[in-house]
Length: 294
Length: 315
Image (cartoon, each protein chain N blue to C red):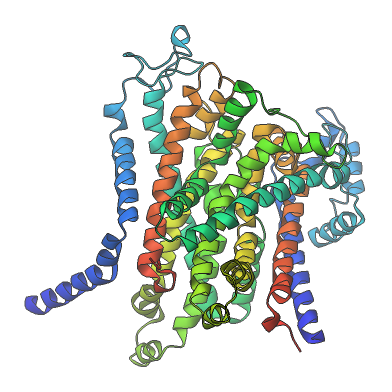
């Protein structure tokens, strides 16, 4: 009994290695991206220990200072420590990025599954709602949701999540329609499995990898949109340590104190490049049709 | 032929209908009661009921939607209660041309730089120019446009003083001054596209150059430039147009940021200000226009395919 279980565990592991790990490790630039992201995650997790100041503590006597021993990356116009704000900003960006994509994914996949499996009128109605969401660019959609929901960190997550539902739903439905009529689904049905079991064991595993690739690439868009919304003043509210807000704040002092927007700006750019590298790598590893030629 | 066109038309109409329902729903979801906002702080119950009746808000929602759509189609979009401006004029006659000019100019810059870079990268694969193109593609695509804009303002606007940093001069009124004002914003927005265009050009051209008809052209003794630019590039245009069309969302995203950084009075600026002022009716106009723009571009991309690829034309 235990032996049999071990055998399945073993094959599952080696399959995982062959299908996921090995092609992934071959993507060198994706690994570089992953390493950078890991650094950001470490910085975010250990922010309370790494920070030298309270990220929202203002010290007007020490405003607009360049990098020094007391303030490693300088201070902004309120005298807030940029190094500490940078660390907490990483926390916020990653949390908003991953949370919004996760919520958008769960809702989108649920809608896509429902539409693809039920068909008929349900499918028509659901897909028209999805069409409505997809008829607008993400940022405009997120801005509209922010207008309805109001400002604040939590609402940024919801607004972004809602603007991601459309792509996930359409993708899932497309994949489900392809999988639905495969003989093994018919076989599972004939074996008397419940619909829930069929979805969970036989439909989802076959549609999951393109969806996860899509999710990986969405995280960078989510972080870009989040900081963009905050930059525009319709996202996270001050004094929350947010990179978009920090860039907006430093804009007025760009000639006197370029580090104020430079610190969060460069941090954001590096994170986005790393996420893109990883996203491209994931896509290439999973999808043989976009395999690089060189 | 007729069937295909009418099917396409019906599909587009359905999407337009959905766009309008979505925009209308947005206004219904917006917080606050429009009647009490319009009346101000002090009003009687009768004047409240009267205005509600005048605005048609006492009717069933489906009738409200009908009225709203009729007004919208007629160009009667109401007035902004902050600037007292006609919203149709503000959005369509003032903001939209600014955004379209910015987008068009950025796309032009991106194509002029991106296509040759992509071609060179494909011809000299794995050389320094290929590495440069790839770096450009990844960096340009990921770099947040609002921060790039700030850097450009700092370096070229303030420090070197070569370009004006803020404001918009319409190129159709004063062409050269308009271009001069648009240079930094268009580079900011175009940078995002350059890498993408270079990358697609490179990979598509590499694929095309392996085709038998390229070998045939070479065998006929056609000069190398003709093989690449005439036989090769012609077949790269399709994927290029697809990508440009697909990335319109990214373009509009960048345009909103760029407009705010450079204080250009375009759609992005309009929607941002309206969200901050809680002027939902203006936000709605912005949503509706971008939705229509999206539909129009998708339709245009579809039509370009037939134009670019004779194989798709119906005989």
